[in-house]
Amino acid sequence: MNLPFFIARRYLVKQKGTFSSFIIKIAIVATALSVAVMILSAAVITGFKTTITEKLFAFNGHVHLETYDPTNSNSLTLKPLSVDNRLISEIKKIPHVQQVFPFTQRPTIIQVHNQIEGIQLKGIDKDFHFLKGITLTGKQIDFTDSAYAKQIILSQTTANRLSVAVGDTVQLNFIEAGSALPRIRRVTVAGIYHSGMEEIDKSFGICDTRLLQRINNWQANNINGYQINLENEKYSDTVANYIISNLVSNSSGITAYTIPDLYAGIYDWLSITNTNSMILLVIMGIVAIINMATVLLIVMVDRTTMIGILKSLGMSYGGTRNIFLYIAALVGIAGTLGGNLLALVLCWIQTKYGIIQMNEDTYYMKYAPVKIIWWQVGLIDVVTLLLCVLCMWLPTLYIRRIQPAKVLQFK
Image (cartoon, rainbow, N blue to C red; front, side, top):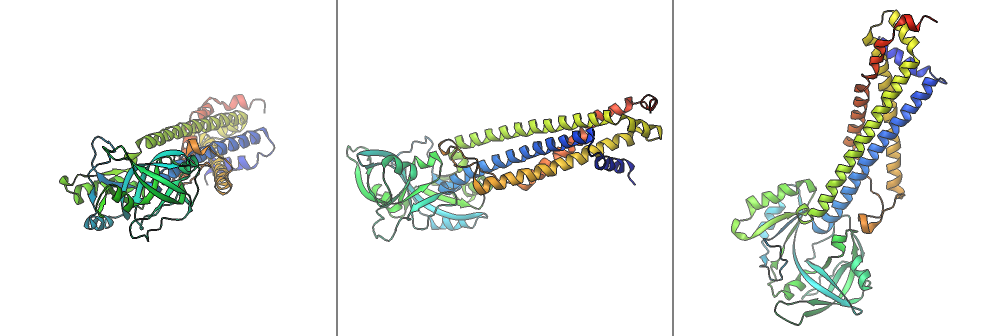
């Protein structure tokens, strides 16, 4: 029999209604709250990052192959690429690649109701579709017109600024280099999309790629680049490097960009949230450790008589110390389980009902997102328990100072 563990377990069970019992309950509650806060902070930060990146990928995919532009000039006259079906086929064979879409892109000025708005038009074909994370009101573009679809999809942000709705007609003004007059096209708003990402919603609209090819005086197989959708963002760099190293010749003038490359500012912002999360985790871990150390010291002071009796009966310092380490471990386990339950319940409530709301203009989402990653929960639990037990060694040094003759002389 493990005598220290037996005594620790009996001590916790038989202390109902005593001062020690009250202190231990406070320790369990405090540990549970610390663990719950750590799990919730990790879930919110993970959910926040996942939601932001999903919105970016939903519109842009994960990797772009485009003409190399060292000055990032966004010139209207960048040399177009020719659709390479062999290249598309080879890219589709790469592990983790789901889809490859050719696209065109050109700035335009939308004019309607005596209002104007400048956006980038992204030309797509009939195979293109939004990924999860973007909502669409209205219809997709109808590509059945033999010339080009005279329809457009605007963002909710742009539609609100121009006061247009699905079915309205707008005028597209394409500025030509060296010409004082724009080329004009009238199109109908087929649908309105919403991502919640200001960088996308205020900047992009969707149209038939054939429209932009005509405006650019390009051939039917001329494009600006390829959008590649992957099954997971973590493969972006690997796929981009593989394409450049193995599938694209050095003389082709093509380069690969990942979404973190294109939206470096957003990813820098997200990295700051990682730092904030780590600071919060460290603070709550320290609170849990200090709480456990204080409680264990109080319990030892309260149970000096028991320690004196055990010492007088011949129990070693190590055995007596282990009793309180077991008490700390059992209290830590109870608090950790309680913290897990509390955190998971709160995450479920937020996911189900969206109680905590956010300013979408600032945070790109209407509700605080939560995403539980089980290895993070397990890591928080294990580290909390280990730190609680390991940091109990210092308070147990008090046991060495207890002399059985002094604590038992009045018993």
